[in-house]
Image 1 (cartoon, rainbow, N blue to C red):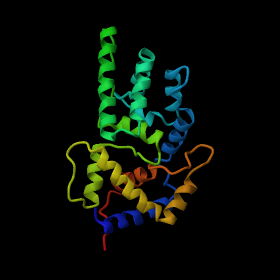
Image 2: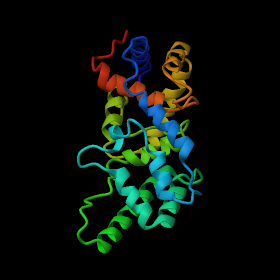
Image 3: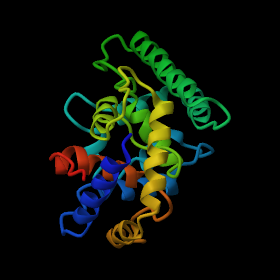
Image 4: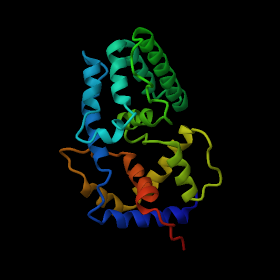
Length: 236
């Protein structure tokens, strides 16, 4: 990635944070805080715990779109095979194992659970588990569980941000390990921008939002460049 392009993007992002419209994605920090408060794999009712962990005023923005209901389907899995799903999440959150392996196994297990559900409920209208859609929801679990390590992910946005920043090689398939490294690099650069950090903190409410280090700041930065800003970066 080219340093001057990233610096130009950071300058544009800082200007954005100075505007009243700087809170388009701030709901994500609220959802992250709810997850941090509610997530507990030792809870008696795991299905209820899962629902509380992903419940917020803005939850529809993330998993309740038309023909896209990963939260509801995972809730069904928890109800039908609670112990197995618990083990799935334990494996996904095991930092001793490789990221790619954990993510791919999680999707594989979801495939198995869906097959089991269809076998038991022949008239079920469940078409998919939605956890294989570019690992978007899997990345959400990871980002909410480990805010300072993982970020929200989708392949197309990753490809676009690398193109914006002049990376020489653009992945054609999923590469979660590289994505994590790119996010870490951008996060370290943002940490050196005191004005950006101050403006960001001013957006947050300690009563509702996750206040500790979070890769969501990198996600907000990238989405601003890709969605809100859209223009060519002015590189000296």
